[in-house]
Length: 319
Image 1 (cartoon, one colour):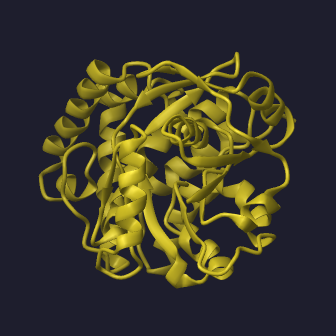
Image 2 (tube, rainbow, N blue to C red):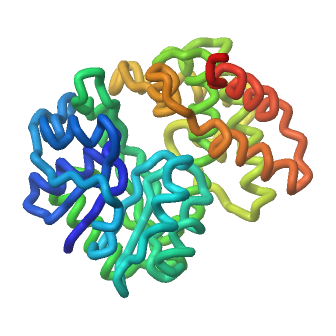
């Protein structure tokens, strides 16, 4: 199976390096200085594991037209033009590990709905100033078919990722999982941008934890309005926080912060990484999308609206 990964940032590089190390045929599409660094130095992984992989790097996304599997690991505001220019071969499969819940529609317009797998990525890392990738969290990538069933192709991809050392699982209800992650990610994104702190710090803090709890409960209301039955689970579960009183929800947030402090104390949400490096953030594609959807379905989500405007102000380019 020939795999092409669009995007040489943290997640794209982690996947490419591990697949290459397992003997898979894989290439990365990157541009600008990032492409130069990856070509010259290879993909250097540190953190949970340490190795360097000399993965082929291309600047022209048309290389993906010959791939059996295309993985989109670009920022949401970067992928619009790139994906629309693709002309994949018949039967090629794609999935996106981007944040948000609208990514599958973008891919379906090019690959066809039946050839797009739903996906969420809980694995994470950070591009360091020297160009290396600090691999901080190896929680699973979940893949699933458009309908609520499993298939040999999703099972094959998951098995390939697992063999390469990347945690992965098949989901029979990927839409619910995608929304479950989205409802968790919006509060994390807002907390990181507004406080500009590591994840463990703003989750453990008593004041910011109250904001995260309020956002999480509002996101659960949005999912319900969208007809999505969120899956309660561990971590920053909006579904779990919607089922308890507010103070209990705050305790959940602070407990998750303690977990991050123990497991990944240096973890930073991708939006904060972008902000610190002066790059465009995904405020509109993540928080703005959630706010617009809430307005379309007639919800007044005060915490979401306030955080959206704060994030916009903080992430606005300098005059």
